[in-house]
Length: 341
Image (tube, rainbow, N blue to C red; front, side, top):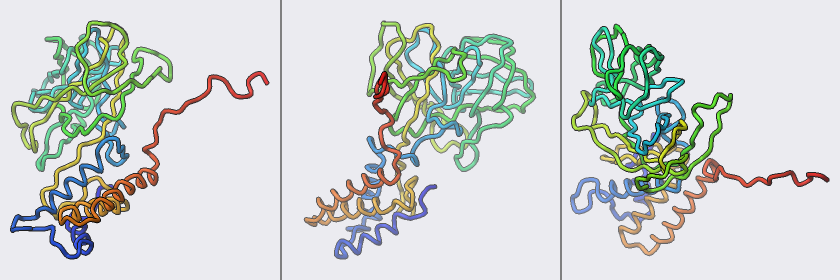
């Protein structure tokens, strides 16, 4: 649950801890340095390696930050937007954003544009997920009438396909991935495997990867860069972005499903009446400590360094309280201790 405590409430408390020295509207500058202190503390509390369950992205209620997609032969880069088209026998691709006409309906048919070649054929059943548009107030709303299964009618180009539908004429698409802070993990799944539990394994997430010519199952992935829509979709609060991920080495003909989790980037507060974003109220003691340390540093109080160390210690204590930040990897022996005995 997001916070109900305001930045102002924390700053008022801190005022009693810095011998009454003002940290708000100093020299007539509105809200400063209090507002910048709050933004700095919040950003630090959400940065790597601090992995918080309450800050984990969950696109379309899937449990994943980036919606599931599959590799195609010899392609390293995958532009992801968080709306997908999936054919169970072929794979899953991402759909262009609303501003880029990801799904255009005419009242008789719909044309879908994907961000890389989809490999689908006419007659296959395709399922759309998280396709929608921006509603008033800047909220992306998935369209339930579109997010279902359809029979592909035609495939005009490698990155488009059509299906028959009586949905009223309109422009829909993906929301874009606009809130990546840092990539937490990546898991590859053997997409074509027919076992009840498909083989899966984690791969390494790196800062950057070069283009490669070696062809084999990938064992690294990087969040390379983003591209920003050239236009603003109707009602969108800002232009949507497409996140480009690169696999290394070059995927072969084996079809891998890619599952990516990420931590969201911290929001930027604009007013002291804002609340503390995703940070839970019951853990606000750590934030108060961080603001206190920064406020003491601003007034050049010698206690600042000690209080900052306490802030770091309290962040660690929050990790222990929530107990979700322990590494998931564990060492196991190949055989039981009592094997043969």
